[in-house]
Amino acid sequence: MASEPGLVRPAAPLDRQARTRRTRELSDGHFALLIGLPVIAFLIAVVGYPLIYSIWMSLHKIVFFGGYRATFAGLDNYASVLHDEQFWWSTWVTIRFTIESVLLTMVLGLLIALLLNRRLMLGGLIRTLIFLPWCVSLYGAGLMFAYLARSQTGLGTAILGLLGIDATTDFLSGSSIIEVLAIGNAWTMAPLVAMFILANLKTIPTRLYDLAAIDRLSAFETFRYVTLPPIRFSLFVFTSITTVLSMKLFDFIFVLSGGGPGTASATLTYQVYKRSFKELNLGLGSAMSFYLLFLIIGSTLLLFLLWGRKEKPL
Amino acid sequence: MRKSGPWLTLATLLLLIWSILPIYWMVRMAFLTPAEITQFPPPIFPTRFNIASFFNVLGFDHTLADGTMVRASGQANQVLRGLVNSVIVAVIVTVITLVIVVPLAYVFARLEFRFKNLLLNAVLLAVALPPVSTLIPFYAMFVQLKLAGTLTGLVLVDLTLTVPFVAWMLIGYFRNLPPVERLARIDGYSRFGTLFFLIVPMAKSGVAVAAVIAFLFAWNEFTFALILVNGTTANTLPTAISGFLFQNPQPSNLAACIVLTILPPGLVAYFLQRHVAEMSLVDPVR
Image 1 (cartoon, rainbow over the protein chains, first blue to last red):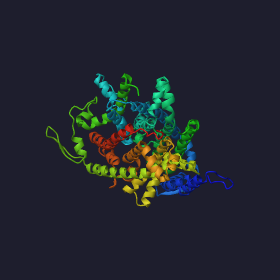
Image 2 (cartoon, rainbow over the protein chains, first blue to last red):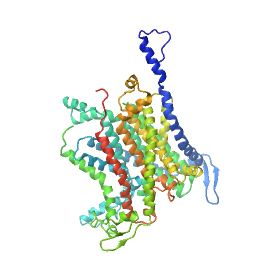
Image 3 (cartoon, rainbow over the protein chains, first blue to last red):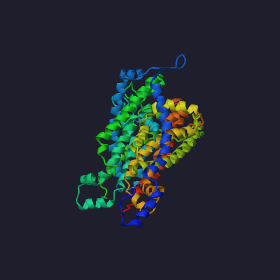
Image 4 (cartoon, chains in turn cyan, blue):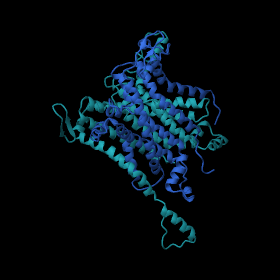
């Protein structure tokens, strides 16, 4: 806002004061540059290099047996991924797993946040216990759910045994393995979502709830008009975040099911791992990982177009 | 706030069971005797509270009540070293992440400048990269830089995960804060002054959550640690534990170790929840 030369201002002293302060003040752009640039540079260095390396690998046919050779193959790897039936199966598994995970995580996260926003007896203890799943590593959670769902060591079998039924329940079978994975994934992510939504809920002034009570809004209306507006943007952000996290989830699936039984839970990350590290087909694996990256970016973009665009960040 | 009714109690109870059950199932295994672990159907409660596994994984022999001695696990050294390394890495990553991310998220959330969306998308791209596709490049790069098998290397890798991720979360949080910048400027605060003396105190709970996220990411990171530091002196706890599964399956020792890995973040969660619960935003208008 530089003062235009032709304009005569009546309040000259005030104006001068404002201007002298402005010269000492960094502009928005400069301040952003000062803070953002080193970080961006670091990220480009350590993210850009692996990315370019992966692109290079995806364009080559890399052979280990009989001496390391890398021959340029153009887009052959990308083409053969598209002809790979396993790839399409894995894409379907990934999408199914992601949708189930995200829906469950968001509903649970919102419920937990709304619950913890109330005054509870033993509130500290309850909050700690509810946040605890999030402290468990994905690796540990994978083991927990494996032991919990497997027929030999599982809870289902134990309960049946308690009822005197000599049978086993195996949730790690092909028909329900994706649901077990999604439940486990939601189990670890929901507290994280809840914590952020809770932090947002805390920013709602309590007097708004008093006003809502005076206006005799029903519980649903209070939620709709008082509670929901400040957390809508966070809900969108976390739907995106959990989508991305679910799609690139690896260690949890690796530990819990190893892509199995058969290929029942072979998500794209697991397929990339299998191609790259088990079959040592680095070119094909890299090409596949770029399809996965497109899928991740595509779905977040879709979320933004369908939902995020309409949300006004507060 | 309304009074708590029976529905609230029921909901609380259900959520508690949901949260605790998988952890309980694992903790219970740590207390089972080898005979009980192979028993069918599996017992729901441990009857004898066998604590030998906890001693074993930390490198102590343990004598049971009936006089039999359970030898210390051969992997205790790995576990102890992993514990120390994990604490070091997690603390360093948390501090660096906060120093980097708080100003970054603030800038993206509150200021308008050129190329903002482009830069924001670059950060988001870093979040979207699946780790399986960057494993080989990272390994190749770190071998060349002589960072493979070092804690420094692991800290760097963890930062590439935590910085974009935490930034993405905090941006949404900072956007929700009341607009105090103009008021601050009138009161004579500089840019950095506004950030550190007004914004950060207002966003305390968000920053605390961000700190814990960074801590947990570094504490629990498994995929990169497996490739970069497993089997070296920079081994972290998760990779040290994986030995119990793959090399020498001992379910109770494995369970005892998993319990150990939950304890420090559990403490963190306790302090954090207090912080989030008691924190309500200071309303600047009043």
